[in-house]
Amino acid sequence: MMKKFLLGALLSLSAFASVANELSQYAATRVQRAHNLAQEEKLKEAISTLEALELSRGYDQAFVARMLGIFYWQNEQVTLAIKQLEVAVNSGLLDDEQAWQTRKMLADMLINEQQFSKALPHYYDLSKSVPEKQTAHDIWLRIAQSHYQLSQWSKVLAAMGRYEQFGQPDELAPLSIKLSAELELKKWQPAIGTIKRLITIESERVEWWRQLAALYLRVNDDKRALDSMALAKLKGVALSQEDLKLLAQMYGRRGIPERAAMVLGELKDIDSDSKLKAQQATYWQMAKEWDESIASWRLAAKLDRQYYWNLSQLLVQEGHYQDALVALDKVSGRKADVALVKTRAYYKLKRIEDALANAKRANEIEPSAQAQSWVKYLTQLRKAKATQSS
Image (cartoon, rainbow, N blue to C red; front, side, top):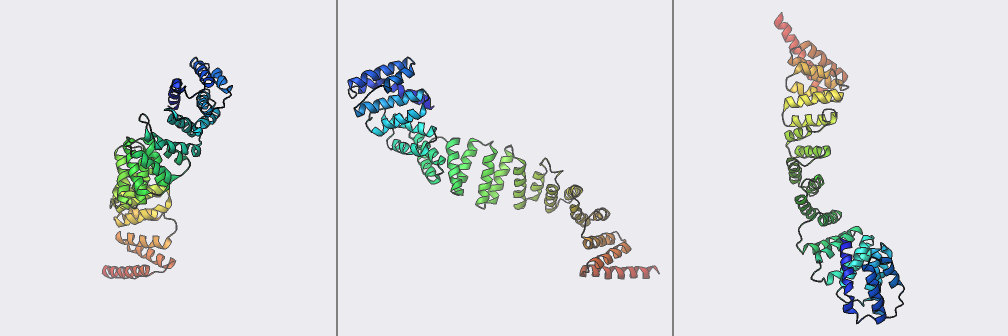
């Protein structure tokens, strides 16, 4: 793009005859010769011709510096090209129709060479008076890009404000620059609007959806955060495993545990990760999907013994007392708690002696009102049954 522009500028210099009356005869003759050599692709000879000139007039020096700058650039001598173009532009003597283009050429070279601080004054100068055939929005975009490279975020947004006044169609690069500045300045609400525009351009890009959800969370809008990730999933955006975990958490926080459990079920490692499986079991339990929860707790417990406790609790709740006793035998520690739960399970199975034995064991390990209540009740029940039997 830049090369095409510079070549256009070079060709425009062929019209130097229009300013020949301003060049001295000495300079005009040699400039014509250098131009002819360049046209014949004898670039080094053209450069040598101009380098050999001894000029005293300011305008001659500025004009030749501009031409040399272009030739140096074409010859891939960028540092020399910049130096000569700076001489031409800073002289203030080139006020012909190519003066604006020459300054832009210099600014573009500086930005290409990562010299953003030096490029900016030229771009700001260019923005003040843009010729009809040139694009003012492009100048403001270059200004925004330069401030972005210098981490001058407020100035990035100011430049982007000017750029957007020209009503250009949304494009990825300008919007990305704007978004970066908004995020750096913690302007969350405007950033949400910018992200939505980026999603319109690149709806398949998961980073935009992920960032949109994160921004909604920043402004405490959990509902829209969830809606964003759910919509991304619905549209077939390739969500990562971490994205799915986040989506499940958001469903859980929004009180939709069944959806949370289902999303976790899509994770590749759900059946080999005890914590994830336990989380899924918890969601199923919150959703009162008891069979699903029991199945998940059972697998979580096989992966990590600590979950046999959770499994046993739910089995007792749902009346699976024999299965609960099997699970309780695999619980590590919590001896008093285990004995109390066994007391209830045995009682429900009408095994009073086993229930009483566990109630006494619980009370011995860790005396409690609950254990003592069970001991008292079961002892009385046993006596009553004995009396009935006799």
